[in-house]
Length: 238
Image 1 (cartoon, one colour):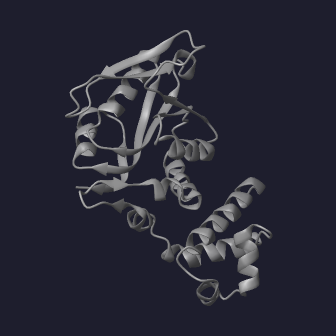
Image 2 (spheres, helix red, strand yellow; image 1 turned 180 degrees about the vertical axis):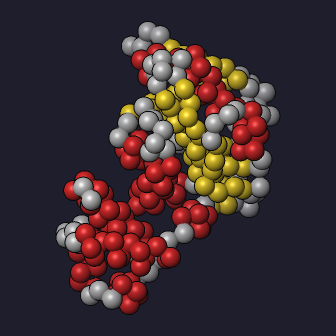
């Protein structure tokens, strides 16, 4: 194992422990791992890194206690009208890092050059995934920024809105031939994501996949039928 791979595994263990610490006490984690509370505390705080062998043992031991889908679902908050708030997910850096690791692992062989999303809620997820893949992240906005001369520009009508929305992405953000992974926190109707795909087409870039934390209804299945690229979400809400 390379030194870099070893360090990445140790960091994954720390993220896992930090995530579990939000559900389990140190006493409970001590019983699960067989390690003293003081040692676990040092790991969680990042004061000490475990050995490579212990890291592997702990990751294998703790994996049954981590269910990413369940962690996301229990953080999503619904109001009395059925609308939901996923900020508790986006703000949980330990959880987001673990999700990003899983997504990055799926696209490790796709030679991704850029992560593309739409401002603003998709940015946290995009940044985490881009960091894991060691690539840049770019995002389309609903207004033109001063100082940018040329934009890719796509207009569409969001479902039931009755108004036109336009997304703008600077020309420098995407280059011909780049391989792009499109991500967002939530996908409902798919219009915004289709606009991002159109931007890739305009730039001559190739979309290699789409990933979302939450999908609503059957939109994922519709996109799969329309586009010949992998499209998936972590959880689906009806």
